[in-house]
Structures are given as structure tokens and as C-alpha cells.
Length: 409
Image 1 (cartoon, rainbow, N blue to C red):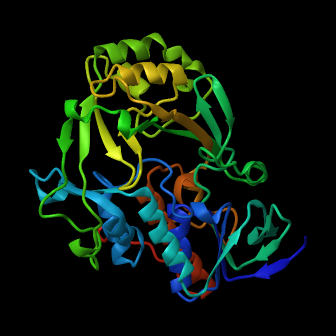
Image 2: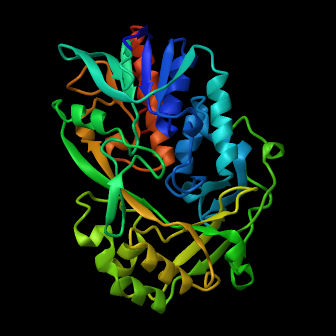
Image 3: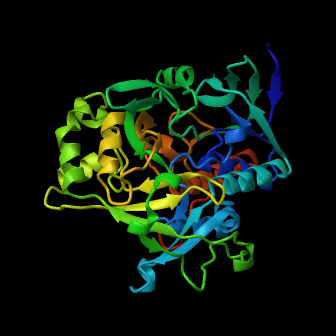
């Protein structure tokens, strides 16, 4: 196949950065193509199904002020809302919404499908089309050439993605999805500084095998918070509780005894991880003076049988994960439906970007999200919005715009 298509802006990737970039570019009147591996994963919450929290909720509110979608999606999908640090001053308070994973994804997909000027293309990208030092298009896995005046690359963890569970590892963009291996190889030929970053996720648990009677219930706040300036409590779905347990000395003993099976400690992973989202292995090693760490048991949805145990992200062997989970109160008989894993992927040095998020080496090419070495839905969404906005402004012959430090976070 050798089809040729032309747009104003191409957005590569359908995660939180890519969807915000595609929506704002389209709203600004640019004919925009959103290229994604699978339509069904557009707007997917790959890790924790939650929006906001400390250091994050202000980004959601700022995106909302710029007509971003994340806050509205959280209001329509949030099943538990809380204001963190509520007893402290306003400057450090943060709204957090535990979301129904499917409701959130459907909200994002509905917005994309009904957005004027936006075309969704289901394909993988293999390479950029360059003219001198300018990006002018892409070549897809199906050999389709798509041309545009600006391109936003928001590939998440897919560039050279490698999934690790203990000593086992295999290519993957996330569990169940192939990586963008060819694209990553071709991008490495360009004059960017590239390194490896690591992030992780905990095992998922069958909620019917958890003894909730032993756990501390954590209901949402009353009155219930709202994320979007346009939202209301009436839009929220049914509200339910999360639950709290904690690790103990036996848990830590199991982890330390088997830490050599962790991909992070066996040498299989060379990338560094985010400072504020450490694995349970890192917590036990780095905070050896502590005999317990909190674990928040968070429902993945109103109709989901899965629980997300926030606080025990791990890349230990699957059998070790089962052993340490069973040592935690309330989880003695918990069934692991899928083991936790670490994922290592390519990121590009953000010092190679202008403040507009356009790259310094390739004109018309913008980077947004985890490709820039950040992690988190909120950071990705905020960058996607700025990159998409500036890509559209460049196409329209306008100057770039980035909020100043006295205007936004």
C-alpha cells in the first residue's frame, strides 16, 4: 500500500498527551490526524485509574482552564473524590479522583469521535519524513505516507518498550500491546540525546478474594469535590470507598530475601525510575528503618472485579509477588489476576526542546509526555495540550505560547 494523506497537524499516540494535543489542535481549526495503534485503547489509564493528587491536581485545573478534557473526564468517571491535605493551607491541598477505568476511557473516546476537524487513524508509525531539518510527515507500518505542517510525538512508554517481570522480559509498550520498535530505532538515528527510563505497576487483585473486614475503609469526601470549572456533583457516577492496609516485617523479609529476582536489582534494567513513584523493593531498601508502608486498595471501576493495590509497584518474580501479597493483612488469600511489572523505554533529553515543546534539531516536530522524561497522566496531558496548541499556532503562522511561572505551574 502506498496511500498519501495530508493534514495540518499529525499527533502520534493516543494516551493522555496525545488526546489533549489532538483535541486542542482540532479545536483551533487545524485538520488533525491522531495516529494510534488501537482505537479501543484511546484514553486508556495504563497504570493507576486515578486523576489528580499532590503535585498533580493543579495541572488538571490549569488544563481545564485551557479547555482540556482531563478534568471533565474525571468528573464523569470519578467514583471516589477526596481533597488531600485538607487540614493544611490552600496552597498544598489537592483534589484526587479515583476513576472507573472504562468510564474514563469512554468519555475520552466520545470527545475524540465528536470533535470537528479530527481524523483517527489506526496504525503504527515506523518513521518520520524529513526535508532537510524539517519534519513534513510520517510513514506508517502499513506504508501509508501522511504529510503535515507540524507533528506532535506523544508515544508514552512505547518507544523501545521492554516489560520486566522478575528475570523474564519481553518487548511491549504496556501489558497486551506491542512496542514501537522500528520507530524507536529510526528516531535514534536523529541528533537527539536518548536514554532509558523505567516505570512500574503493581499486581492486580481479584476483589472477591480480599478480606475487607480486616481493612480500614476510606470513603470519599462529603461534600464531594468537583474537578472541572464546568462540572457539577450531579455528573459524578455512584461513589464508593477505597480501603487501606499496610506491609509488615514479614512482607519486607520476603522482599529482601528475593530482591535479586527484581529486574531493578538484577541488572536487567539500566533506566532510572521516577523519584516520587518508587517500587516496593526501593521502599524497603531505601527506608530500611520503617517496618511498614501503606497500601491503598483502589477499585478499578463500578463493575470491575479488579483492585489496584497502590503502593506495591514491583518487578519481582511472580511467585515472590504472590508470597509478599499474602503476607499483608486482608490479602492472605488474595488472587493475583496479573503480576506487577516494570517497563523500560526510550526518552529524549528535554533540554533539546524549546519552551513551546518543539524540538531544537527538527523543525515542526513537537514532543509531549513521557518521551520528555516525565511520568504521570497529568504531566503528560499538560504537555500534550501545550504541544498541540503550539503545533496549531505554528501551522497558522502565529507565535508560540507558553504560560509563565507567575501564570501557571
